[in-house]
Structures are given as C-alpha cells and as structure tokens.
Image 1 (cartoon, helix red, strand yellow):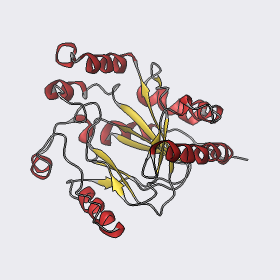
Image 2 (cartoon, one colour):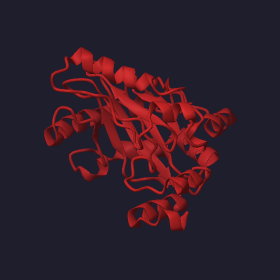
Image 3 (tube, rainbow, N blue to C red):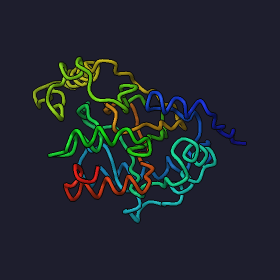
Image 4 (tube, helix red, strand yellow):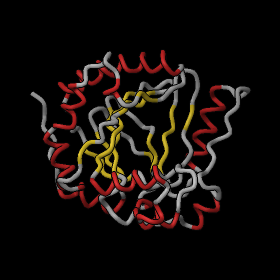
Length: 261
C-alpha cells in the first residue's frame, strides 16, 4: 500500500522564507508507474519533433499520443491539494500547460540564471516586476521528479527581494548570458563549464529531489536548470496560477506591466 504524504505548516514556513519547499514522496509509487510510462513516450516524441538536445515537451495535453489522466491524477493527489490550498490559497489552479523536462541526449547543457516573468521578458519594466514579486500569490511553479533529479538550482530568499551587489557583480547583464558552450568543446568540457557557471551565482544551492518528490518554488527568484546526459530525467513542470497571475500575464503580453502593476 502506498504511504501517504502529510502536509505540515513547516512547508508553508519554508516557502514563505526561502521561496522553496519540497514535498517529499508526495507522488505515490502507483502513480509514478503511470507517469513514467507516459514520460517515456513523451521523451521519444519530443526528440522526434525537436531533436536530441531538447529538454522538454510542453504542454503534455497537446499530444494525443499521451494518456493525460495520470497528469490530472497528479494534481488531484490529496497532498498536492493540501499544499496548494495552505501555501498558495484556494484560488490557485493548475496552469494547463504542464510539461515534462528531460536530460539532453548528446552533451551537457544548462539554462542561464534567470527570474521568470521578469528577466526573461524582453523590455520588461524591472521596477514593476520587483513590485509584483512582493505578492506571494504570484509566480508559483513546481518540479515533480519521476526519477531522482539534481538539476534545479536556486538562490534561497531571492524570491522576495531585488538583486544583491555581489549578484550584480557576477552577472551584470539582464538577462545574464548562459555559459560559453561551443561545438569544439568536448562533452566533459561542456559539463564543467555548465557547472562552473552554475556555481558562480553567489548563494546558489542545488535542490536534490528523489523520485516522487515535488519542489514548489517561486519562479521570480534566481534559478536555473543544469543538465547532464548520463542521468535519466523525467520531471513534471507546471505552475499554479490565480486571477492575479493571469492579469500579470495579460499585462506582459500587452506590454502594459508598468501601468497595471
């Protein structure tokens, strides 16, 4: 029989303080079986469509080749519902753009350090973005590990503040460029360059997840994904949005963030 995850107020305290909490073992083994089956199909589909280095298929609901029910079952888990209701609030709903994140096939790769909905939006009104992150209802997302996963790195506490001087000194451009990866680099050189780049962010910490764990984190804080080829990865990636999130997204689309926020 599957062991049931139990939500506690510690999860909320961690989330509010660090911008991150991990729900250990919230995905039961029976659902892991179903999700892994769909993830294997999704990996093959993603690589056929986008090439061997692709790191995601999103949204999963777009693809009739996949059975969507296990993804709905994930959001319906009692532990997930308890965490969302108590940490975020009952007005939050899953985004309907769930993706699955995969390892690259040919060589290591990592994203640039970024703050979602801010530094990755061209022409963003940065002061308005930093006003918006004070609202804890906004910019909430998750990574749900179907296999052990050590790819996510975050800077705890950066979800509710501006950039610190040492962060700006290391990464003066907004958004920061990613690591220097060239076709001439060996796989091992690519791997080391990605890791060196990842570690260069002051205060950065990895978020190790075991199969069945879910990391809730505020995407407006500094974070990145660092990926190697030899570690199998299939990690659910989604967000929980409230009406204010949707208002922000509409303002970004219409380039009216400074007026609306």
